[in-house]
Every structure is written in C-alpha cells, then in structure tokens.
Amino acid sequence: MQDLRSLTHAELERFASETLGEPRFRADQLFQWIHAHGALDFGAMTNLSVALRERLAQVARLDTLVVDAVAESRDGTRKLRLLAHDGAAIESVLIPDEDKLTQCISSQVGCALDCRFCATAKLGFKRNLSPGEIVDQIYRARALLSEISPSRRVTNLVYMGMGEPLHNYENVVKSLRILNHDLGAKISLRRITVSTAGLVPAIEKLGTEDVRPNLAISLNATTDEVRGLVMPINKKWNIARLLQAVRAFPLERRRRITFEYVLLEGVNDSLEDAARLAQHLRGMPCKVNLIPWNPHPLSSYRRPTPLAVERFQNEVKRLGLPTYLRTPRGDDIDAACGQLAARAKR
Ligand code: SAH
Image (cartoon, rainbow, N blue to C red):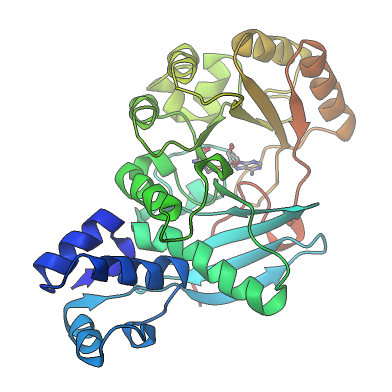
C-alpha cells in the first residue's frame, strides 16, 4: 500500500493514472486535500465520489503523525512530540520571535552522525523519515496553531531538528518539492533552511536541484584537529573541503549562507578561534549564528560564560562578519538547539 502523503505531485499524477485509472486532475484534487488542507483520511475528501474514496482506502494509505505531547516553555516556545505509524517518536519545535514563527523540523529518527555535543547523536540512528512524515510535521503544527493561536502562522522552516537532513537526501528533496508546490502548502524556498553537519557530496548535489533551500552549515570549530574531535564527520570532509563546496553553492541574489557555531567552553571559544573563523569565511556572503552550548546529561561540555560569549561575538563582528547570538529558547522543556532526543514512551 502506497502512502500518498509521501508522493510528489508528479508521482501522484502517475499514481492516479496508473493505479487508479483516473484522469490527471484527480492528482490535483488529492494533492490539495493532502498538502493544502492537511486531510487526515480519504473520507474527508468530499469532492471525490464515495466509490473513489473507498477504492483509495483499499489501495493506498495516508500516514499521519499523531501529536502525542505538547510542551510549552516560559518563553513561548512549544515542543511537539509526534508519533509515526510505527510508534517512532520525533520532535518538532515552534519558536516565536517577534513577528516571525519558526518551525524546526526533524528529518530522521535519531541520527547516524556522532557529534559529541549533541543529544540526538546519543540515540543512534533508527530510520529515515519519509517525505510524508517530514511535511506532516508542518501540517500537524498548523492544525495545533489553528486551535490554540489562530492569529499565528509558521513563517520559516528550518531542518534543524533530529537527524542529518542530507543523510536522508532523496526524502528531504521530495519534501521541499511538496512544500513548495503551488497546489500544496506553497511555502517559498526562501523561507526554508536545510542545515547540515557538512556532507560535501550532498551539498554539491543540492546545489544542482531546482528546489534549492537556504543552506546552513554546522561549522562548530576552526581547526581540523578540534572539529575532528567534536564532529567526527570532519575526518571524511575537512574544513577546507567543506568550505570549498559551500563557496560553490549557487546563491540567489542577496541570499547568504548561515554558519552555525556551537560555543563550547575551552574547546572552540578563544579569540584565536574567532580570528580563524573570520579568516575562513572572509569574502563569503554569509552570517554566523553563535549558539552557546545547551547542556544535556549525556555530554560533559560546558557553556562558556556570558562574558566569554560576548567577547567571542564582538571579536568576530569586529573582523567583519555579521554575527548573531542564538539565545537558548525552550531550554526549560528540553527544546533548545541540539536537545531533541525524544525518549520512547514508557
Ligand atoms: N544534522 C544537522 C541538523 C541538526 S543539528 C546539522 O548538523 O546541522 C542543528 C544544530 O544544533 C547544529 O548546528 C548543531 O551544531 C546544533 N547543536 C547540536 N547539539 C547542540 C547543543 N547541545 N547545544 C547547542 N547547539 C547544538
């Protein structure tokens, strides 16, 4: 049985004609129900005949995530725990910031990378999310918002939740295609950012796609020695190789690359690091997001003091890079950056 939420519009057209023997415009109707209206089942699709809806129920599925828990932080951040059809738990976070509302979405259950400071890494890798499971995080959040906060809509999407998006390349690109489609949620690619730990061949491939999101790179260190320690992926593609791929990534006018830099006390927060960071990124259209490390029990790094963070930021700024401080959001509900690691329901 085919999960229809995971099909791109083109795939759905093929399904409509080949499996259902229906005209192509059926695909438009199905796609709208699934991706514009967030339909939960075929029964809801009232402009399709009852016979067709019954047929659909026999040959296809419409997998939907179930909102299992919603935690709300003092600062307004909300963390959604979502269950997939096989019981796998993933997390997605809604982060309000003035007139923006950013949703952080997951791309995998667990993660195969081994970044030493990250809570998701400790889960190990369970499986990839399907395209349907990626996009449904957005539809479930929409449904929730329409109940609790009807005036707010998600304005930005970041693939910075659980998992390494570029390790689930095909499904992530399909999810972009689905979200961007005119008959669906119609989300502009300018409002979508995919974040990677630095999988160079996948970055190069992403640069050739017709659906190309904004790119964020988790840099997190300025020497190969330190980066290799905190992010073992650096042994496969080192900083020079990574930055070479990033420089070649095609950017639309006035777009820039985001570099994330998790600050770890005594590891990567010296003024020499600040200088090397500026050196590495010189001349690139980019900005740097500094993220003071968010503690979790499975890792023994420390967050630098506010003074050390400020010194680092001022130095990077002084050297000419636009630099923003990511203050911890939702840390009281374990929803802050890198803390997502849904525990199985007991
Ligand atoms: N795998 C992707 C996306 C998920 S991680 C990537 O590496 O980009 C999203 C961001 O959270 C990354 O920039 C990562 O460096 C950061 N991060 C992970 N654990 C963190 C922690 N405990 N505190 C602060 N940031 C963290």
